[in-house]
Image (tube, rainbow, N blue to C red; front, side, top):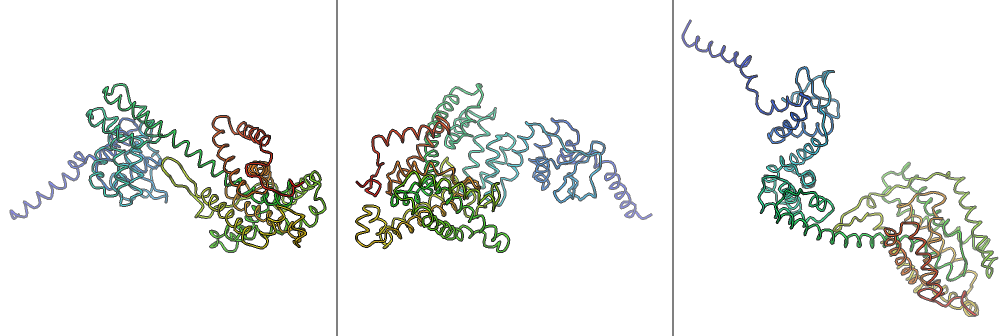
Length: 536
């Protein structure tokens, strides 16, 4: 046998020996760590999480993510670990190779609460280098909440490479949270961490600073106590701002529901107990429009409210004119009969809607531009409430312009101030009454479009707002739109500041008592306006 051939044969035999016997004994740390998931031991699982997460292996994120979701399966017999996907496919966790099926003896790797926090931190650390900025910020926030020491190296690496300002700030907060609870961190590092978390300034930061142990250096404990007091003061201010925003939001709803009533009550002196049902009709018009769009023109769904607003105004306005011509005009000067007639009419309208649409709530969806929320400082502002506020102010401005610059507005103001003089000047007061009632009902209809986005669309929708609407009108001054505006926002804000103290029910009772006392002193409301109801 030639010498070179003999040498090659020996080399081949040695290679086969290493493959068959030696290499399995020298498996890499990644494979060893993955195998520990099959031991069904919490300490082994914790060690495996740390090794896999810090390995830099491309399989690390799929493994830890599967562990978080309960998709990491381990076979105690073969010590094999598998990652199962949502699509039903599975891979060997150690090699990444696809497998035909997971053995029946395999079960999901178990976690306890401590391990879940570690998994959350590992997932956050593994996504810190994602190309997507939003993903990196969310990962940093996850590490901030868990403040696991094992994520510190990944956070430091990501922080050194980060260029986005928001992501860098989130990573800085995550690093501070880890250092604050790290046992071997220096006193200087802990003081810097306290300062960083103090600047974070939300409830999570407050809970984190409150939760530090008593074994911290005295300077750190003092700095944390000072930071806690500062955050509490800041959160109290933001809580006041949040209540003020909720009050403005409620006030815009009350204003939208009361504008039409202010016009009707101010010009005609009619106590319209069916005003809430005009709001309800507007909400059901919105429901019908959306149902038609869903079934026939789904691409137009984002425009459904823009289509519903004029339709609700026309439908509710036309019904208002019909009610005035058929019922109200026979009852002028008889307020008790008007109240009873419109109350009976409200019951008829509610039952008619129950017969047509059923007694249950109807679904009215939010267009995409009215969905979601955004953070402003430490308060949350929802887009639907914000758009309702903008819409309410737009309706108010348009109504003011109509009253000031149109012939109908001039006639309505004349009738409001002195009905007999207006009639003697040739103004058809009966026509003005009909159009005024229709206008007030139409505005109530478009109020229903807005309210359908924040309340249940049901036959009882209007009843939720009729009493509050009357309170707004009486408090602000009958027939005065500016008084209605001030009254609505005043009552809305007062309501939201009283609710945390007295509760929702007692808060409303307190508001009602305050209004009664106020009316005793100023019977004509905040902004008195001369009208037929107060003429001699």
